[in-house]
Amino acid sequence: MLNVFYTEILKLRRTKMFWLVIIGALMPALISAFAAWGNMSWTDLYKNNLLFLNVMVSPLLLSLLSGYVVAREYSDSTINQLFVYPYRRMSILLGKTFVVALLSLAVIVLNYSAIWMVGSLMSDQPIPNDLIGKYTEAFIWMAALQMLLTPLMMATGIVGKSYIPSVVLGIIAILVNMMAISGVEDHLAGRVLFVSYLPFGTMIIQLLDITKPGVEDHIHALIPHAAMFLLLFVFNAFYYTKSEVHSGS
Image (cartoon, rainbow, N blue to C red; front, side):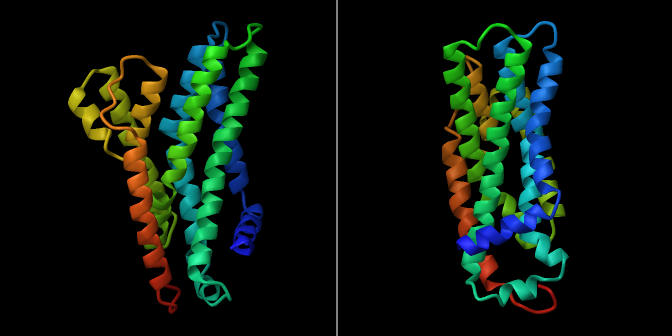
């Protein structure tokens, strides 16, 4: 499986996907910095960065990356060659899953470093210790919850045999996230309850619960995300290993 993982990394090195990871990680930090220019607050800087990253950027970026990793062989018509390699299909799937999870983690880590560096350059005041703990916790939870969605984002590419369905999933995820934001801001209990059980949306409710006092979380985001991880991982394993090798399918 390590050979498969290494091969997938080499494939990505020949593309612009690593640049997308870097740009996607830096963009929320830079936009949050411009928004705070002249009146910087560590709290607002971190909160706005986390919201922009997890509501708008990560769903679309990671869905695109996931779809690309699993569907590239279909679009290049090399899936037949891949399936006759001397590796079990389950090993190939696990290698691809680890690559996507690593890319997801890389986005979070790069963004965490970027927002700290930007804030340090903009302010003479060091970030308070209590905020470091609070927002580090938020970053850790977002990283874990994003990685648990890896099988879901990969499933759309595996079934659709293209990264386009994954992009559609990313757009739907953004809409769900916006529903979560509006539900909390407008105090719409029914909407908050609804999105609390949806992938992506429940993660945003969890994020707001960490960064904003008084948010009612009906269920911890770990529960629906862990359930989605288990269900979709089993589905991907079954579907991917049972795919027939003919006519590029």
